[in-house]
Image 1 (tube, one colour):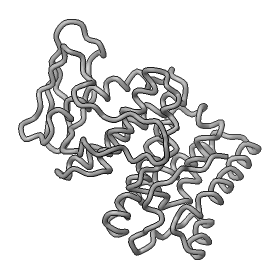
Image 2 (cartoon, rainbow, N blue to C red):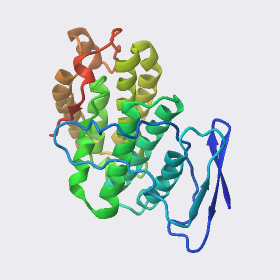
Image 3 (cartoon, rainbow, N blue to C red):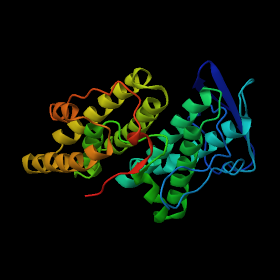
Length: 287
């Protein structure tokens, strides 16, 4: 029997009988009411997988749900999904595998946040669908499912093209595979950027500002970590890649010329109004 701390003064007790298919759970997540019937909003015709309740735990797994948990099925499934992702997050896995596994985990965290609001949301359903899509891609070697990774959900958009340019440049630099921590930082940063803009779209800049501040901090850490792992020639290439991405990302955001100028100085003001064109989802550019 294992007791897992969940935060928010909740704990889950997990018991296993017979053979343990996934090993012991070392981490848990508390899930609440996500809209399970919402279609995925990945945009375009990208291949995706929808979350299917009661499909992610071995038959001999029993998860004791804390009293008052809004959605017991989703709670149980999320615990098992996290455990299935764990082997792909190991340091001996390729950087891209670890990136997708950590990103699926970050989507679960986003879904948890939406669930904690105790009201079903399209963003929460989308996050859960993305988590199981990446899980399916990793388990079944379905590379076509990874196309969804470049699609921002319809509940969000490119709110900070400067930060997106930074993180995409890092992901495509030699440092990404060279520095063990970067795949996780990049994955977490990307989901946080999507989360931040979704908050901006739904509730406005005042509510989103703290999320953007956190995203800024994470992206800056990733960029500096990558920069310090590169030689002078590679640093020049990183900067050029960043500038090329920014040129393509800026038109996808609702940015003024003044903000575009400020971005070059690594400073950005989130517009103090609810965006429109940058809240419809988009496909991230590829170089």
